[in-house]
Length: 445
Image (cartoon, rainbow, N blue to C red; front, side, top):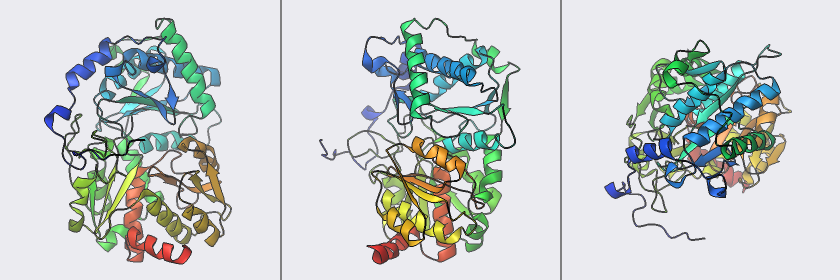
């Protein structure tokens, strides 16, 4: 594996590294995938299908086939509640969102799309799905998020969250993948679709206030009152992602000294420093991509960032800069075990197989079980929903945690809550997460 650091790493990208959004979106609209080429077929990875219109792996026909397959899956499972649809700020997310709306409306799906807030973080979709569940024996909701996560600006992606609220299981993803590829091979015959204007005006398409719903529920999972009372200066960089319209609203509604360091949205992501390999990648766990926020660390008591769909996080402290993802996960888990007294004693801590073993020591110290899964947050969805897990973390800076009462918050990763929890940890202990991890390492090795 070549790990040579590119000379541009940590610097703002030169103009010749920026995408041409018109060319990219044109390729999305006009491209015809070759079903015989494995690189151009639908392939669900750890969280949905990803590709680029410039490489023939993500265009209108891919998205239409995937969404039609999701509609067929819903019918096969009797899922007849609303489908919550969101998107991030990548250039391909806008036309892919439109494709999804057309196909969902063509299938008569009860669709919920964002209103005033154009973009929707993954955790806001997961929360909406789960909050629709209580007391319903049928009519369960599900969701789609149009995002390639932190991947480069020319990337596109789409992922499906079934009624469990988190990433689709391997079995569900495999079903959708096979059906989507069957539709591609058939020349997209069998795809039900209506024009966008008609789709948006359909009685089955309604606006949903994802932002308001998420803001109202936040005090159920993070002690925002403690953060506000402490006066902690919190700097947040949305990295031009889907939470750009969320952070200011969170600070204003809950009285936080929260400064959004940049509210710029530009699908070229020209304001994000180049990653280690010479690509633009909006990765909040990368010390290269995070150079902008790291350079501001002395202005704040704590700073944080999220990737484009806001399911991953990065934490910056004045003394240490960007914390390694595994260090913060361990500090989070240790803090939560001490400051969530109403969590059931039977609820375990979860980690992926390649996440730090420090979580095992934290679990043992606090008398909690440790639940290990393969790589991929989808393995945490069911135990989080059932309350068997109170915290789940993965090595790539993704985590979710239970509400104060021990019930599931989101069954997908939540980067927003991860950043706010860092502020809560600092407010309630007087030590930032970096200092807390140092104490933890000294105690547990």
